[in-house]
View 1 (tube, rainbow, N blue to C red):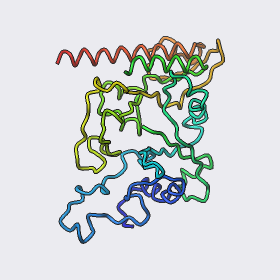
View 2: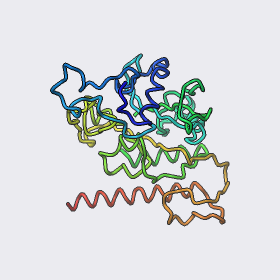
View 3: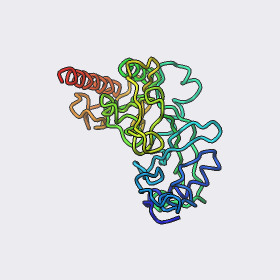
View 4: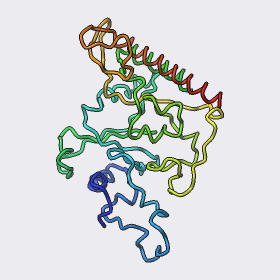
Length: 285
């Protein structure tokens, strides 16, 4: 394999055989035997930019893949078990919790512990390193989702945080949602699919995506994401600290205990306020 990959991409190349054993196929660029297609003799007249395998990762710890058994497109996130609060996400994806229709926590397909025998960089060699797999009418769904979390003793605490990694890729073309910790399932909005690293193009990396008007998609689904700061709080318990993106929230204090659920409600209100600002701005253009 020619050295045309970044160090972060090389980590995925090292993991490719391991993921393949678990039933997940990465793009050719991340196969150990990969050779750039634009350097093949039969592609002599092709430019590098014309070839899909020239497209690098957009986010170092998230990669797209295909589940071999059914062809479902998934995203794989390399993460530290405790940092991303995976136990809480696993709980929200249990059969009991999924039975509640208000539960719109992002679906979790599988958590795959990475064995120490898989070579990783020094900073990623923690034994708690795992692979996290996730699949890709905002306001009502968000209200029900936050209500569901609160009814189960969970405060999200970052309701209006900026999206990162995979979630930006899924949301970036939909400006009314990219500011918040919510991810839209694009399956019916972009029926032809999109490329993980250049989201305005289809999976071939060359054809522009075809986007349906969301108002014509009755099954549109939004998911709550980013549970890093979410926490279980027993009834009537208080907390302190400045966790939360809305720093003007009256509850936030390092010293005065406050109700974490009220912080969620304040941030949810600011989310709606910003949505209305966007709607009014678009209406006046």
